[in-house]
Image 1 (cartoon, rainbow, N blue to C red):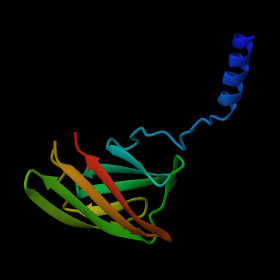
Image 2: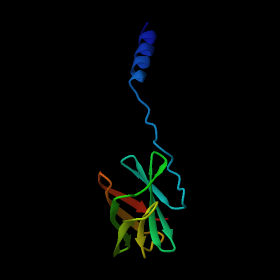
Image 3: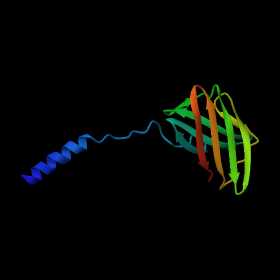
Image 4: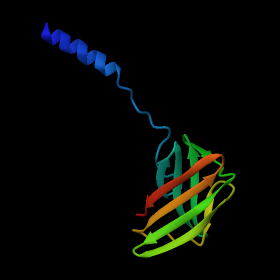
Length: 123
Protein backbone atom coordinates (compact mmCIF):
# COMPACT_ATOMS: atom_id res chain seq x y z
CA UNK A 1 0.00 0.00 0.00
CA UNK A 2 2.83 2.37 0.87
CA UNK A 3 4.48 1.72 -2.50
CA UNK A 4 1.22 2.43 -4.29
CA UNK A 5 0.71 5.72 -2.43
CA UNK A 6 4.31 6.71 -3.12
CA UNK A 7 3.87 6.01 -6.84
CA UNK A 8 0.65 8.06 -6.94
CA UNK A 9 2.36 10.90 -5.09
CA UNK A 10 5.32 10.86 -7.48
CA UNK A 11 2.97 10.76 -10.47
CA UNK A 12 1.01 13.75 -9.22
CA UNK A 13 4.10 15.81 -8.42
CA UNK A 14 5.55 15.15 -11.87
CA UNK A 15 2.46 16.78 -13.39
CA UNK A 16 3.45 20.02 -11.69
CA UNK A 17 6.77 20.25 -13.47
CA UNK A 18 6.84 22.14 -16.75
CA UNK A 19 9.53 21.81 -19.36
CA UNK A 20 11.47 24.89 -20.43
CA UNK A 21 11.58 25.00 -24.20
CA UNK A 22 14.21 27.06 -26.00
CA UNK A 23 12.93 29.77 -28.31
CA UNK A 24 15.58 29.21 -30.95
CA UNK A 25 18.90 27.57 -31.44
CA UNK A 26 21.98 29.22 -30.00
CA UNK A 27 24.27 28.21 -32.83
CA UNK A 28 26.29 30.95 -34.51
CA UNK A 29 25.01 31.61 -38.01
CA UNK A 30 27.72 34.12 -38.93
CA UNK A 31 30.75 32.57 -37.22
CA UNK A 32 30.60 34.68 -34.07
CA UNK A 33 29.75 34.37 -30.39
CA UNK A 34 26.05 33.99 -29.48
CA UNK A 35 24.26 35.14 -26.31
CA UNK A 36 20.55 35.18 -25.50
CA UNK A 37 18.95 38.04 -23.54
CA UNK A 38 15.21 38.72 -23.08
CA UNK A 39 14.09 36.16 -25.69
CA UNK A 40 16.41 37.72 -28.29
CA UNK A 41 19.61 36.19 -29.62
CA UNK A 42 22.64 38.43 -30.25
CA UNK A 43 25.61 37.20 -32.31
CA UNK A 44 28.80 39.26 -32.11
CA UNK A 45 30.94 38.88 -35.25
CA UNK A 46 34.25 40.40 -36.29
CA UNK A 47 34.29 41.64 -39.89
CA UNK A 48 36.46 43.73 -42.22
CA UNK A 49 34.90 47.04 -41.08
CA UNK A 50 35.02 46.28 -37.36
CA UNK A 51 32.34 44.30 -35.56
CA UNK A 52 28.68 43.52 -36.07
CA UNK A 53 25.86 42.21 -33.91
CA UNK A 54 23.13 40.19 -35.62
CA UNK A 55 19.80 40.06 -33.78
CA UNK A 56 17.30 37.21 -33.92
CA UNK A 57 13.88 36.88 -32.35
CA UNK A 58 12.85 33.25 -31.75
CA UNK A 59 15.24 32.03 -34.44
CA UNK A 60 14.15 34.57 -37.06
CA UNK A 61 16.45 37.40 -38.20
CA UNK A 62 15.32 40.76 -36.84
CA UNK A 63 16.10 44.10 -38.47
CA UNK A 64 17.67 46.40 -35.84
CA UNK A 65 15.54 49.37 -36.94
CA UNK A 66 15.57 52.03 -34.24
CA UNK A 67 18.25 50.28 -32.20
CA UNK A 68 21.54 51.86 -31.17
CA UNK A 69 24.00 51.45 -28.36
CA UNK A 70 27.60 50.99 -27.35
CA UNK A 71 30.07 48.11 -27.60
CA UNK A 72 32.78 48.06 -24.96
CA UNK A 73 35.79 45.78 -25.52
CA UNK A 74 37.91 44.89 -22.48
CA UNK A 75 41.38 43.44 -23.01
CA UNK A 76 43.33 43.27 -19.76
CA UNK A 77 43.27 46.79 -18.30
CA UNK A 78 42.52 48.32 -21.70
CA UNK A 79 38.94 49.46 -22.34
CA UNK A 80 37.67 50.74 -25.70
CA UNK A 81 34.15 51.96 -26.52
CA UNK A 82 32.56 51.90 -29.98
CA UNK A 83 29.13 53.26 -30.93
CA UNK A 84 26.66 50.74 -32.32
CA UNK A 85 24.55 51.97 -35.22
CA UNK A 86 21.77 50.15 -37.04
CA UNK A 87 22.63 48.76 -40.45
CA UNK A 88 20.30 46.98 -42.84
CA UNK A 89 20.39 43.64 -41.03
CA UNK A 90 22.71 44.18 -38.06
CA UNK A 91 24.16 46.62 -35.56
CA UNK A 92 27.60 47.84 -36.61
CA UNK A 93 30.59 49.02 -34.58
CA UNK A 94 32.96 50.59 -37.11
CA UNK A 95 36.64 50.07 -36.33
CA UNK A 96 36.04 47.72 -33.42
CA UNK A 97 38.72 45.11 -32.83
CA UNK A 98 37.83 41.85 -31.09
CA UNK A 99 41.06 40.19 -29.89
CA UNK A 100 40.94 36.61 -28.63
CA UNK A 101 40.56 36.36 -24.88
CA UNK A 102 38.93 39.77 -24.57
CA UNK A 103 35.53 40.43 -23.07
CA UNK A 104 32.90 42.56 -24.76
CA UNK A 105 29.77 44.22 -23.40
CA UNK A 106 27.05 45.54 -25.70
CA UNK A 107 24.49 47.97 -24.29
CA UNK A 108 21.60 48.10 -26.76
CA UNK A 109 18.78 50.67 -26.70
CA UNK A 110 15.67 51.19 -28.74
CA UNK A 111 12.96 49.56 -30.78
CA UNK A 112 10.41 49.95 -28.00
CA UNK A 113 12.32 47.67 -25.66
CA UNK A 114 14.15 48.32 -22.44
CA UNK A 115 17.91 48.73 -22.52
CA UNK A 116 19.59 45.34 -22.86
CA UNK A 117 23.09 44.40 -21.75
CA UNK A 118 24.77 41.52 -23.57
CA UNK A 119 28.10 40.13 -22.29
CA UNK A 120 30.52 38.15 -24.45
CA UNK A 121 33.79 36.29 -23.88
CA UNK A 122 35.75 36.15 -27.12
CA UNK A 123 37.45 32.89 -28.01
